[in-house]
Image (cartoon, rainbow, N blue to C red; front, side, top):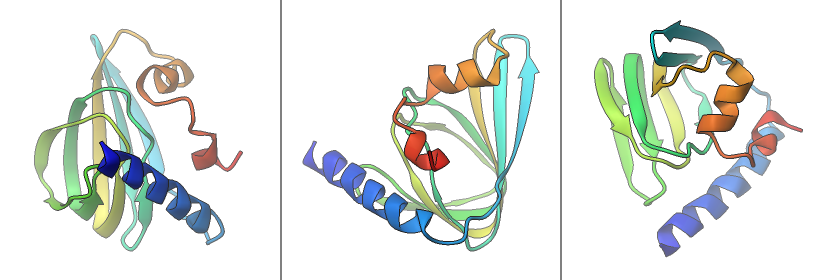
Length: 131
């Protein structure tokens, strides 16, 4: 458990430092199907991306690119497209090695993006939005 707390503390410190740097634009797209919501994000090469803390495990698809993920347990893993996997709850930090197109997939009937955000990510995300 101490590794998880330590990772969260480090991620918050990194977040504070990164906020002072020039920010990159990560394009988002939202897709809806029967009982399905897909959030697609495109992240540019060289970006450091601090993800939002997800409340639950969910399906993910890496459609394009390559990145290194630092996970809450302190481990690192290189992900190379194409691949599909289940992402555990929590926050991840990524370094984008090659432009990434990434999808988070959720089972839901909801189609309001703001409500979906509240359903699937922790409410302490104001820091990520610069508020």
